[in-house]
Amino acid sequence: MFVRIPAGFSWAEPIRLVRLLSASPQAALFPLTVIVVGEGSSVLLIQEDAGIGPASAHTINGRIELVLEPNASVRYCRIQRWDAGAHEFLLQRATLQEGAQLDMVNINIGGRVTKSHVIANLLGPQAASRVYGFVFGHHEQHIDFHSLQDHQAPHTFSDLLYKAALKDASRMIYTGLIRIAKPAKQTDAYQANHNLLLSQQAKAETIPMLEILADDVRCKHGATVGPVDEEQLFYFMTRGIPRPAAERLLVMGFVEPVIQQVPGESHQQRLRQELESGL
Image: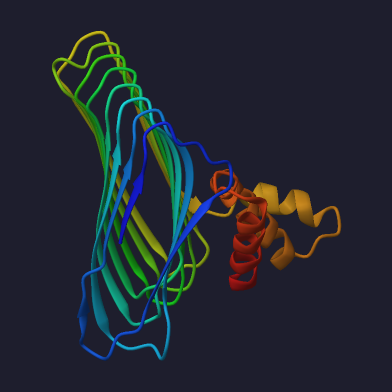
């Protein structure tokens, strides 16, 4: 799937890209998406990838390339709903030229195993990327997420926030790297990963990393792993809210900052309903 946004194009409504895949057992699929946004353009893109038909063990080896030419502005959201037998291996890469601005959201709901490698290459001065993500793990899902914020030019900015809510025996592994090359002076970069464990069997591992080769930069990272806060639960329960309902409220509050980054109120509301029904 190839999408080309011409230079100087501006469109307020989301452009929706939908891919539906049905796979026979043991099959391998190789979906490719290339999106090129011309100089000075402004666009909202929502990509939905979903499995249809009966669940079966199969592999999806996908690649998504986002190319932002100078001063392009893009809000991009990917919602993944592969079926329960899918094993996904994904390379998702955004390349930003001078002055390009990217807000990217990844919502991961489906699949048996997911391994994602998400890259933001900031190649020109004044380029900025904001990457948000959420994983809702259930059953025995295994999610392995690796991010790279690669600053190659001075005066660039990147921010990453990735959250996971894990129930049953699901597992999340996060590895994130902020790399600041020697020419990338006066760079500002931040990275955060927060994991909420909703059962005794759920597990999360997080490894944030920094590689800084330049002076005069600001760079921070942080990570948390833990269960629902018992004091917050107690606060709700003292006001007459049953424990299961209180847990749902806390989880939905936990994910809300990411949901709000999804373009379109209708898409946000559908995701809230989908996640709440899963709880």
